[in-house]
Image: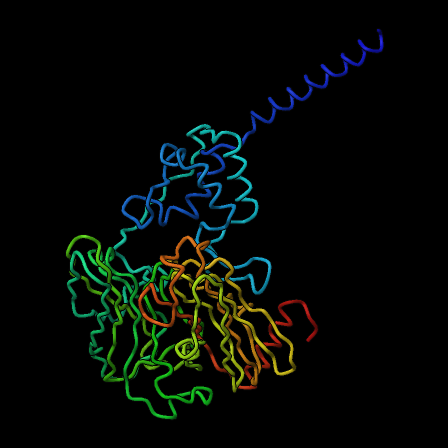
Length: 440
C-alpha cells in the first residue's frame, strides 16, 4: 500500500512539474505581435497590403488571424513567399532570395499550433511607410528616376473576349550608342488588371563586331527584359551592361486578357544608363535557353507527365547571371544543368514546384554565379503535368503543343550570359578560391 502511495505521489508531483513548465512556456509563448508580425512585415507585406496584387491584406492581427491555418500550410509547403527552388540541390545563394528560413517557418507553425495568440500589441514592429505603387522600383537603387522612359502605344482591351497580343514598335530617340546598367518594365496603374506579361525587345542594326564570338546569330541579344508577376527588373553587374544603339527601336510584346471591364492599357520601359562615354568591359547577352527545341518538339500527351530536354553549347567561357524558368499552366518543374567538358554534370538550379502565376527571376549572388568553361553544354529539362492531379489543368484529355496562349504550353529559361576571356575566367576562379580560404 505504501508503495502505491509513493507511486501516486511521484505521478502527481510529475504532473505539477509539467504544469509549472507549461506555465513558464505560456509566459514565453510565441505571439503574433512579438514573433510573427516581424516575419510577415519583412517577407509578405510587399504584396499582402491594401491595393496590392495579393487577395488579402495581412497587416494587422485581425486580418491575419482568420488565415492562420492557411498561412501555416502555405509556408510549410514553401508555396509562400513565392520561391520555388528545390532547396536540396544546386546553387542556393541568390541576391533576391525571398524564401523563409527553417526557423521562420517553425515559428509560424508553432504560433498557429498554440492557437495563434495575439500577444502584447506594444511588441509590434514599427510600421513601414510603404512607397506608392506607382514608382520605379529601381529608382531607389540608382538614386534617380530612369534616364530614358519609352512608352508603348495604348491598347484598349474589351471587357469580354479572347486574350490579345499587342506588339507596338517605338523609337527610342537615341542619337548615340548607350550602355544600359539597369532596366525595369511596368504597366501603368490602370493597365495592371489586364496585363498578363510584357516582354520587351530592342531592334537595332548590328555589326558582326558587336557580338561575342559565342553569339553567332545577329539579333540573338535583342531580348531586353520583361514585366511579369515575380520579376522587378534587371540590374547588371559592375563593368557589364546591355548595348542600345543610336536609332534603336523598342518592341513591346504585351499579353492582355479581359477582366469584365474595358481598360486602356499601356506599358513603360525605364532605362538607367552607365555614365555617358563609359564602355563596360562586357556586353551581357540574354538567351532563352531551349526555346527553339521546344517550338519544334514539345508534345504533351493527355493524362501524362512528360519530360523534354534541350541542349545549348557554350563555345567560350561564360558566367551565368540568373535563372528564370518559363512554362505555362501545365508546367511542373524545370532544371538547368551544366555538362562540363570532362563529362562531369553539375546541377545549377532546379525549380521543383513551378507556378505559372509567378515568373520568379532567380539572380545568382556574385560569388555563386555559375562560372563555366568553353565546351560546356547547358541542359534544360522541363516537366509538364497534363493529368487530372494538376489543379491548374483545364482539360487533361487534350493533347498540348507549343503555343503562346496560356492553354498551350512552352518551355525555356531566360538567362543573362556574360562571355569571358580566358584571362578573366582564370582570374575569377583565382579570386573565388582566395575568398573561400584557398591557397594563392
